[in-house]
Length: 424
Image 1 (cartoon, helix red, strand yellow):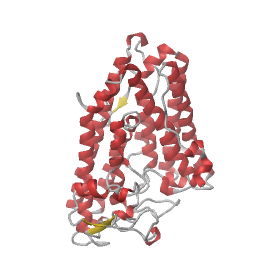
Image 2 (image 1 turned 45 degrees about the horizontal axis):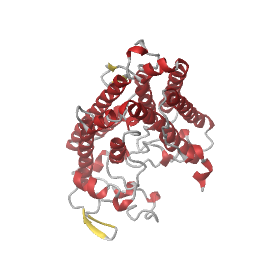
Image 3 (image 1 turned 180 degrees about the horizontal axis):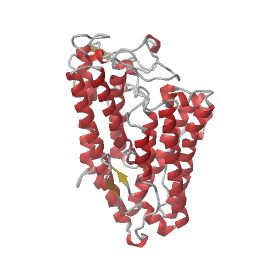
């Protein structure tokens, strides 16, 4: 498991003390060029993490045991660290946003994939594939058509099962599908504990819960698919890649707006709203991002670190090396030093609130316990991080104005803007 001491080091390594580079020496073009260079590095690191996870899964399948299962789980957690720091590239970059659902869609109706506890239920008015259980069934019916699922391959998952029937909850690929396969359901509600899938679910000699051969095929195929999807996105940010070209072709105003759109939309609508405030309003453990593994605190923390990185131009890689260069912070110092200092302080405060929340998750109680109704201290820890995200979004909006970028639309969220609508 990634321990909190390591998290604190990574989180503080790129604090937003303003760059010593003279702002007059930094051009907008250089800032945009560095932004895409860091994107390339982050997606390369996410790909490397997925490959390490794939190797750990292969080792587990070769010898299904509790120690090799825990190694695969540890590799999954480690792979999330660089990936979450890429999410700031999602908003403002359609190439990333259109692709993101293949690797990080959530929440998922896990009954599509494998066996579930009876408490899960057997049917859903919204999803006819709620308990289709592809692992147990070599053929399933999708929209009245019988589909051959006899051989589980990356292509079957990507082309047939992902969002099967046009239903977003039918998440069959990506980190969270693999998370479910490694941990199984978390049946603890707002109580302590994560999923406890046994290694024997993958044993050919001592199989538990049936269909171990097909479960092995599914896990292996999902892991291979994650690597392939990240290879595609990493290539998109290489020299001459479509994502890199798309940013640079937008010109100075368009490129800077892209950076700030990613920062503001992830801060406000996505992270503060859909991923955090919604779960807090409902007290619902199903609304936590990494709900099978109880890793949600890490994912939220590294989203916040990634947002700050987009501003500072600093990125700490998994090996501890740091990439730095011309940054949005440098430009803003020249345009409006007061707003530059304000945004720097707000980004640092948010990361600090996330670190405090992560420290609580490691030492006191998991994120799904923190958001439980009536848990005042846990709720407050989560709300402090949400408040930080909201505050930094307002500073991001002021930075947009200071840089004379015109209208830049940031993602909103009913959870923040119309909380009463959540309960209707």
